[in-house]
Length: 244
Ligand SMILES: Nc1ncnc2c1ncn2[C@@H]1O[C@H](COP(=O)(O)OP(=O)(O)OP(=O)(O)O)[C@@H](O)[C@H]1O
Ligand SMILES: [Mg+2]
Image 1: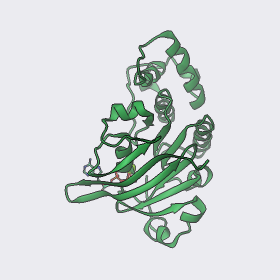
Image 2: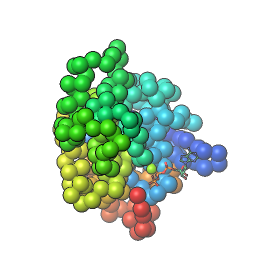
Image 3: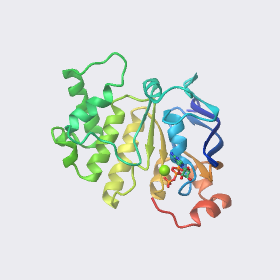
């Protein structure tokens, strides 16, 4: 389980004078759940945006499965096997649950809408616990169900790497446990996951390793137990009150 699936090398992104991601490098191993953590504004979402190709990098390189993906537009990165959920949900509200999932599949090469895709969407809805609401309009879903749907849509791309940006934020304690089980089930299917998260219990129970960011830079890397007791991390992140 030590094979590197994704590698960031010296990734940098500035917005005007603000360096949001400052020379960040890390490896993601095939099959692992990697946590990307740190205080508000430390550059986590921007790092995810660099990986997904939403933003171009100023410097550095990102490699997926031996291929360079940095510099490609987001739709090409998606086709190479990177899928994401957004910190702010982005569903097509007047479409049904099933239709939203099928839209996710349309990113796969050479595919058109067909009955097989509708059938397959059901598998993804089952993984996220939404199969019983397949025909419902997305706008009518509760908040957690919208999050489930966004995840099903990302799974429909059969990604090599799934990027979750605070997917567990805003869930109550029961929903949180169910959310953790869903993420675990996705990894068990063989999907590698990078998750940005502030919920400590989820980081402890899910992540094999964490990268900790502060003010755009990587300040620590290791198992949750190691990094979360690192004095540098405690000072930069855990000592301060934070909010999702
Ligand atoms: N599109 C943008 N234009 C200008 N500045 C931006 C943009 N996106 C992010 N930033 C800035 O870059 C810095 C890092 O933001 P980012 O969203 O990556 O933080 P984050 O670690 O995800 O924080 P949070 O935990 O609050 O979600 C912040 O100072 C933010 O204001
Ligand atoms: Mg963020």
